[in-house]
Length: 530
Image 1 (cartoon, rainbow, N blue to C red):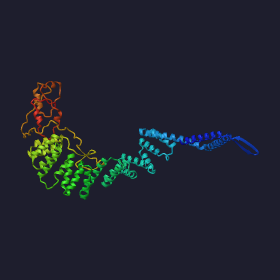
Image 2 (image 1 turned 60 degrees about the horizontal axis):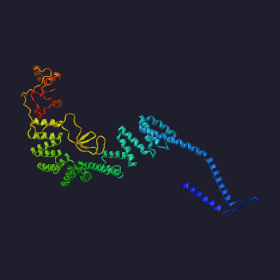
Image 3 (image 1 turned 90 degrees about the horizontal axis):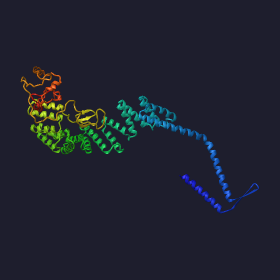
Image 4 (image 1 turned 135 degrees about the horizontal axis):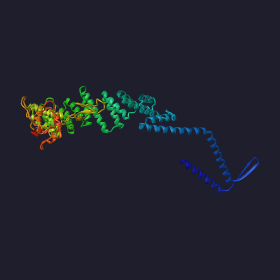
């Protein structure tokens, strides 16, 4: 644009000059070699301009002829480079699409047209082609050669890190990630792997510094950074609980400040405060965490905040927790446990049954079985409750990567991932869950004494309606199964009630007692398939 503007200015100036000369006529006389030449001023100006233009054209021609070899070679070099970049682009697309053959072909073509020291992407394409062909050793060698080039060093470390992860060599993977993090702390993959290495070594201070660096570079959001800091500070407090109680208290209190609803942080902070006889502040921390989400460890620590308390004092503290979180299974179970310790069995039974009505899970039935044994000693009822506990949903626990732990841990024992444990119910056990029709207040029939004859159960003969002898013989054999035929179905009375096979198959080797619902539903002419 500037050149065009300059050209227009020059043309405009020449036009003005010629117009000025045209308005002022005159002659120019030149004497040369005895001759005198006389021309008008306009002709002389045109001649001068023509001479200058001719000189410039001649100079341009001479310069073009002089530089023509370089111009021709540059043309072919640019054309060759364009073809090489086209091959490189096609190869990268093929590598991304998983076409190893085309990627290798374009790699060779690009290497012929472009020098690898001028375009580092050729090394990347060659390594990707080797990976697609299954030549992992060749790919690792290519990644290792990238470490010598400052421009390609991070790419080589990334490739070696992924190969180490593929082979399951976590030490090598963390080594390469650490080198990358030292050069470029903003790399998320390097920072995450380095964080796993620091937590695996128990270097909580180093991990905290790394999390702060991630937060400052905006790799992670503020809430995620606070969560990680709370986890790391809780782990630090647990590790220093015995050796340095003051430092443990500082770390735990800060973790609780960052995440008040994080149960492990609240428990660690309260435990550290209780050790220093600060029961009031520790109790407030546990109460705030309990309001956010009731947890059995919070209840256990809260009720035993003062070791010298009587069992009735612990029961009162459990009731105080229940007032903070009403209509919650964990609140009822907390009161039931404290009441059982205090021998207030009626309160314990009432709260345990309330917990079962809210959430039918294993721990509630086991607690009710303990209460039943302490109050009545009826082994039939106890076995029935134990059988229900076996079939009920499991209690929540700390679960991470398929591992169930009774205590919280900062990292997963399988993958080493930070903050992997979650408080939730583990996977359901195989078997039948408890039927929602079961009633807690229904009477339970005690087991009959040995030697007492059991009342026989009438079974309809499936083979022939009138063959009574065969029917009585089938009753005497407990494990006998008669084939089901069309005649058997025709002989079923209209008021007969079918029995679900799962109810028969769910019986345990140890007699759990008689279910009240099963006793009420029995009739003298009940139909059974098995």
